[in-house]
Image (cartoon, rainbow, N blue to C red; front, top):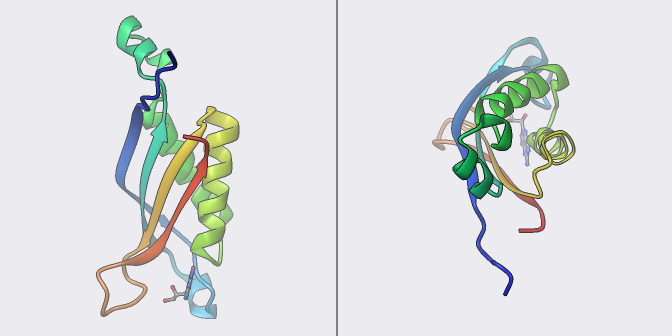
Length: 122
Ligand SMILES: Nc1nc2c(c(=O)[nH]1)N=C([C@H](O)[C@@H](O)CO)CN2
């Protein structure tokens, strides 16, 4: 019988300073984004081998996501989210992911605003 379980590698509250926003003033400053990621990965192999090359390396993902956001300098959070999802699927081989992108300072009366997306087959 097929095993329907899904293992996850996650990153919570990854802080990235980058240029982001639709307004003119936002193109002249950096702002802080917070990234939460849940990524499906079969953790049985690294669980058996104890070898990071079998694992989805959360340090490597964090570094790459930061570089992507800082190079992209998008206007919309939606654009940033799609770009990150594509990189995770195409470069890291993540088959399913849930991504939350928060822009904490964007609406002063709110703790945070942002977007959530899910991509791929769980
Ligand atoms: N759905 C979105 N709405 C808005 C975004 C966004 O990225 N996605 N961005 C802005 C501005 O850049 C805002 O954050 C400035 O405070 C407005 N709405």
